[in-house]
Image (cartoon, rainbow, N blue to C red; front, side):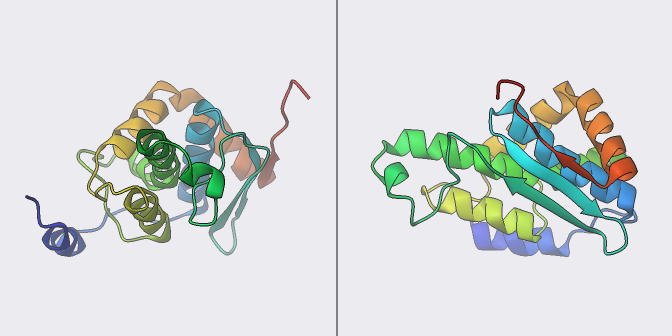
Length: 174
């Protein structure tokens, strides 16, 4: 059995990625979230960056699949395997930003990316809600596969964020 506490302590001792966090890095971070979310069939409402404060904003709206949380009774009534699938997808969306940053910077994304950031902690919470280990590789693998397969879209979204600062997503079927 893997001692998760030990794994997290080891991860904290590991050297953090050695790239500068710039507005370009932030744009790729937010583009990563948006692409994974869109590929998984979830609709972002707005993706934006504040280049001066180096903060990103992602607003999700109009989703048929709700974000999991303890208050969401409709998910609690679903079978555990279904809830695990939903939570793994939300964990992949949460982890996609930092994975995308590293891919853009040419850094390794092998293994499970553990950073202790708010996005990473959110992903761990999604997994923990359904009894899955924070060391589960599925969300990372899913995010990496989607980002790799859709890298041109990631770049286009990042460039648009750098140019305009925000993207307001519209459903072409509406």
